[in-house]
Image 1 (cartoon, one colour):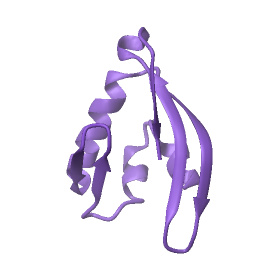
Image 2 (cartoon, helix red, strand yellow; image 1 turned 90 degrees about the horizontal axis):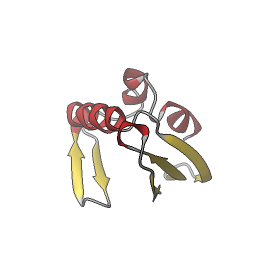
Image 3 (cartoon, rainbow, N blue to C red; image 1 turned 120 degrees about the horizontal axis):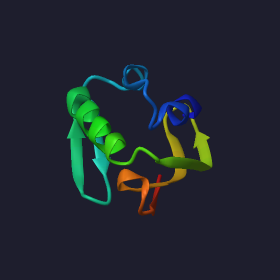
Length: 90
């Protein structure tokens, strides 16, 4: 989870994607959509990160068992680095 957090919003997308199964299903709560497979995840990540180049992140909490892990963080940034927004992901 710590490695994932370090890679999140970075330029090492291949290294980030190597952490996921090929048949990943990533549910995005705020939009109620699901990203299916690494190709869709790559496209979403590139679009998302390019739209907010000044994105920041702050870890709030992380815990894990042998089967499950949870990472809670705050992220924010703005389109073209001007406006600010923030949401919590866990």
